[in-house]
Length: 415
Image 1 (cartoon, rainbow, N blue to C red):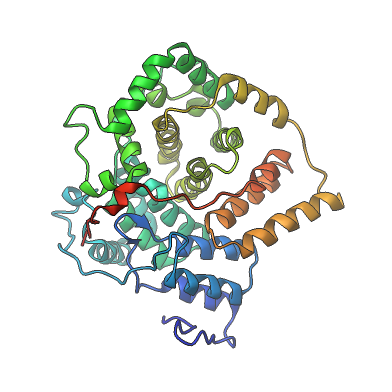
Image 2 (cartoon, rainbow, N blue to C red):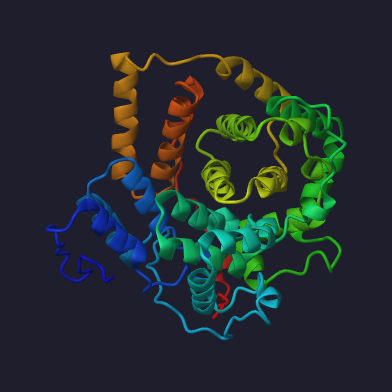
């Protein structure tokens, strides 16, 4: 399907339904999945979030084509690229994480889905891709999970391809199922980790410095050159490669609770982490990628679903540790005491007005991370029967970060 609005004239075909107009945007295959090296093309994430917040088709199309011309980083999107390799059954595993041949990866997954059906492809490929869910700073996982949320085949194919393209392992083979086995809640696990890090603050800071500088075993530190240019993605890749007891310990509640309770515990954990530094760009991604991970898990056989949650926890802690600034025990405890009980009265006009203000601001924002945040937070507000925590989370918008000096280096095209 071709786009229904011309980037040159801005003229939309408003005779078609809102859904048809949104579907056309999600079917657009004319742009590469990244731009200026490793920066992720978030455009379709914004479409799904804006659609979920009931934005008009006109607003969604307006956003989409403005983003094509100029993202919040100041660069426009790049056209679809040729592929260096033809991805097939013989070479696909060797190409994981090599940041090459995205278009061919899309063709490969399109053919697999046509032959075997989407559920069979997910059942086979998610366990392969799952350890690398934090690659591309979680955006590949977001692309797949949010594509599944909306139910659009092209976005789903791109998500699978991007996860393969950007794969950076969390090393699930290191998962320790005993260290935090007695923990019965996410906040217990977070405060325990924080206490351990505070008790050995010099050791943790030395670990963080080594990770941030890539001063770890050369075999572990071997990653794609483009990540070294990125700053943030390199730091996360080094954190995941080096590992840490706090990252690799899988809590008892995550292993033993019913799955719906596990997801709610994870959402609570990332919400508290976000409020520890409201508006933090990195921690916001924990919320939006967790939504993606749950959507992915829903499409898998039950026997595979808990491993998705386990991988999320390991990668999430690795991402937070990588900054060298884990929330303090005091902060976590205070936030838990403040937010674990208050419930909103949905019939209260002031609550409705607050949500309306938040949503209106999200719909107008050029920074697509904010409508995504609001979309997930509002879903959680309903799901938890109006837990005030999630309204509070939704109210803290982020801003586009400055790019590091390393961006002055030439980008690897990854064709």
